Length: 307
Ligand SMILES: Nc1nc2c(ncn2[C@@H]2O[C@H](COP(=O)(O)OP(=O)(O)OP(=O)(O)O)[C@@H](O)[C@H]2O)c(=O)[nH]1
Image (tube, rainbow, N blue to C red; front, top):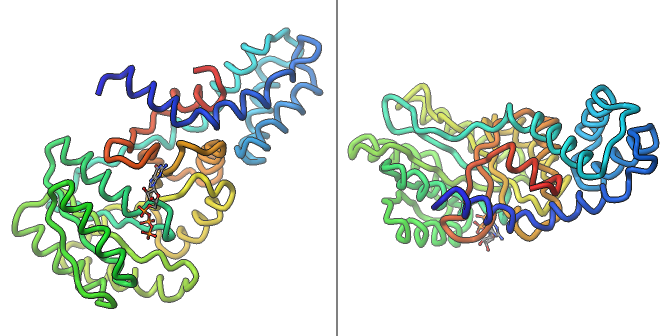
């Protein structure tokens, strides 16, 4: 897909978030000079647009440091806000690369049910396939038969082998079988679905610990990645999920989904500022092509409404 159409689709997806902050910033430049009242309004606009108090305070401080007392137009203000958002996002924009040696790279995907986990696994698999990597899926969420069935459908759709077990089966033994098989057939990336039972932290923690232990026997480096899938429509709630999963699962990176159709995309900035975890990609739709690379400058401009 060409660069232009990537960014056009991204703008389309982010439109509601973009409109929200842009509207909230409209009319805040009162005296045409950047004064305290304007800075207060900018900070409020950022907070109500889901960027969170910490990122809002940081952006305010940077604007004050660089431009206090200077004349500023609304457009320049939005451009300046975009630049400060980009400064927060750049350090966390880290693509998920297949680099593990020996193969396979084992990627555990975690997240609450409904976050878009299954779809994201398929999109990620498709993404790697487009880069000529061999991909395998493993159905480690044995808690619900429907989860296994859904993953099978996606595996068929992208033409990737899948290792499954019975409903209620032991996820660690499925993962063990999958790694053995992936090693035999030379798979590059093994993407593992896991149960999203956040309600029962202890069980989830034990389950993930067991998966890690079993994986460690086959390859001490595995899992190479523990990717948390977050639903942007949850807004600030997505942040508490990061907090909990960090503790329970040792998250190494994030993918935020459903940025299309929500005005709450500012939560990406809050997540970057508060947790500093790598953001690998963003989901802006339901089809396989709707997982996008996380381009911090582009996303910052879209969020600030100047793209
Ligand atoms: N609009 C939009 N919808 C998405 C996106 N990602 C996933 N979805 C939809 O969200 C719903 C839930 O996605 P799943 O992938 O089934 O989510 P899950 O976390 O595996 O949920 P369970 O199957 O309940 O465990 C589906 O209808 C997906 O099509 C996205 O980026 N944008």
